[in-house]
Amino acid sequence: MLAYGELVAFDHMAADARLAPDLHRRAVLCEMAAGEIANYRRLADRIVALGGEPEAVMAPFVEPLAEYHETTEPRDWLEALAKAYIGESIADDFYREVAAFLAPGDRELVLEVLHDDRYAEFAAAEIKAAIEVDPKVANRLALWARRLVGEALSQAQRVAAERASLTDLIVSGSGDLAAVAAMLKRLTTAHGARMSAVGLSN
Image (tube, rainbow, N blue to C red):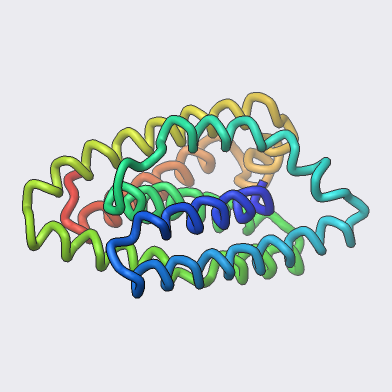
């Protein structure tokens, strides 16, 4: 799932770069897109080392992620940044939580792939700057963020329902359903803090 997420992130960062208002911002996103491909390659190599075939093991996650991105296509530069800042960050938080249940080597690989948060920092700075120039932007982006979260949760529930092995990993790794609920609360708290940090109402 993470490998395919990195591959899709490359596609969308490269596309979002074309929405950039200047060459500097376009270059930043293109550089970050290149980093996503490097991350994908590391994960794909690990899949092969485990005896899997990347295309085959990523296939179950293609449709849910495609539907998420089709229903949350950004209309402009700020919506693209908010999608990256909100949507990608929630996914990264989830992957970090689940990484705790993996074997040490795989846990370290996941955490290393997720470690670079330059894009989130860049997106946050751009969003805050835009709100300072025009405070009305905050309401529009807050509504957009809520839509992003709703669509992400919908597709996450679909994946969980269709991939029993993932659900089993989370439940068994957490210990019980109460621990799963606590994990979801941590994800929600982190999301709220992220929204507040850039001046968006949660």
